[in-house]
Every structure is written in C-alpha cells, then in structure tokens.
Image: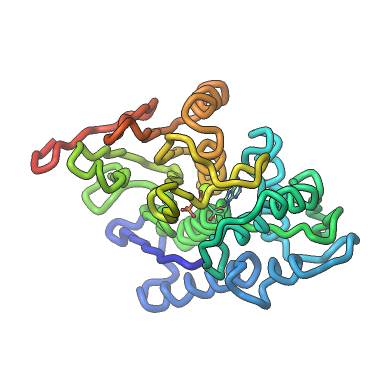
Length: 313
Ligand code: ADP
Ligand code: MG
C-alpha cells in the first residue's frame, strides 16, 4: 500500500485465552494477511488482482477474490451516498496528474482530461459478490482503492486480533486507525489529529476513542506545488482535476474504518461548505481543518481535547 503500519496489543488481562502468544509469530501472521490484501488491491503490484483487472480490456465479468469484490461493492455504495464525490474509477486522473504508483508531476491538457472523463465514472463499474466478480462498461476503466483499502485492512486486522482473544488493541495503517477496548493503562485510546505544518504551533486536538475507526484525509501529505498552485492527490471525479478549495484535512470517526476512510476522502472532495452539510445530514462525526489566509481554523462535532503546545492540557 506504499505506507507503514503500527499495531499495539495489550496482552495484560487478556480476557480470553490468547492463541498466538509469541509477538514474532503474531507479526508474521499479520504480515501474511497484509500481503494477501496487497495481492488483491494494491496498484503498486503489477500482478495483483486489481492491476490485472485494470489491464483487462473486455467488458464481461472478471473473477476476483471475495474481499476485493466486497471492498469494490462498498466503494460503489459510498459513491452513491456521496453523489459521486467518492469514485474509485479516478485512477486514470490520479496517474495523469502524477499521483499514481509512478510519480511524475506534469500538468495535463484540457483535451486529455475531457477524453478521460468519457471513459471513467463509477456508473461504468459493477461489483458482484456471488460469485465474486467485477465488470467494466468501458475498456479504459481502471480502479484505485487507495482511499478505502487501508481502512478495510485496518478493520480486517482488528477483527483478526479480536478473534485471537486480543480484545484491547490499536491498529494503524498509513494514518487510518481502529481502537478496540482500552489501552495498557485501562483508559480509552488517545489519538492526536495531525496538524498541517504551519499550524503546528496551534493546540493539538486529542480524541479519546474505544471500539471505533478513525480516518483522516489531508492535502498536506501528498501534494506538489507547480507555478505557485498547490495540487493535492484528491481528485474531483466530476472535473477530473485535483480539488483546490480551502479544506486542509478531514477526520472521520466511524465504527467501520473502511467507511471512515472513504468518507474522509469524499468530504475532501466536497469542500468545507458541502462537506459540513453532508456530515450533519448523515449524522457523521468529523473534524475539519480549514485554511484561513496564512493560518488554519477548525470545525468539529467530535469531543476533542485541546492541548496547548508545551502545556499539559
Ligand atoms: P491517504 O491516502 O492520504 O490516506 P485518502 O484516503 O484520501 O488519503 O486517499 C487518497 C487517494 O485516493 C489518492 O491518492 C488517489 O489514489 C485516490 N483518490 C483520489 N481522489 C479520489 C476520489 N474522489 N475518490 C476515491 N479515491 C480517490
Ligand atoms: Mg480515504
């Protein structure tokens, strides 16, 4: 997935017998799970299922594994719920703007964009669970699960740990998180929302969470600046261009980390005003950091604790 992961497991007072007691063995099993998810959904691997589907030019059903079809099916439902703000068929644009697995920062022409808009769109993609398969209506359709697969993997690892009897744990992949139970001190897990560079001096926002997922999308981790314009890796599927509004980051708290991941990306596409309306209409829990001239402001309906830099909260 082109990123790192961290897992914290509380072994003390594990309420049920723990099957995998050796940390090394647990790590090996977790990496096997991650490798199998990569083999299904990573566009960084040429022989993954997703890369094979992306190269497939025919429009009949293409057999895939259950989890891959499950994630695509969920992505499709999220596209409908977000009126197309979330759209995994943006891959050709991600590549065109230089954010794909091969990075090259070139600005595409209007002509290239218009041509691709005709070939993309989630309405040209279909997912089936039984038997699991995908289908495209246009030969050029390619998909990218970068905005949802990390969340799925977090949920999957968390469920695995739970099954092993580790009811208290924290799983993080590339900034997407799931917290279960309590930390080693018997308290809710504490998560800090990363601040954009210039806002580092401001108060940090701390969330206390248990039994939920948290995902963040931002424009300050993966972006480039060309001729003074900031291009972020979030694409507006309607225009085929990177979003340019003032939203710097969105954090969504949802019991499913996969859904939180997708919503965070979708709200980045919607921007501050539409995003806020969407959060309220769908009773989501979220935090937004918004660029405001040279500084940042924030909006949140989460219970956040502010810790002043150098202070103790
Ligand atoms: P991060 O990877 O930093 O966690 P996101 O979850 O927002 O951030 O995923 C961003 C990635 O998702 C982009 O790099 C791109 O591959 C893909 N993407 C960009 N725009 C969209 C979109 N509108 N819908 C779905 N996926 C997108
Ligand atoms: Mg996302």
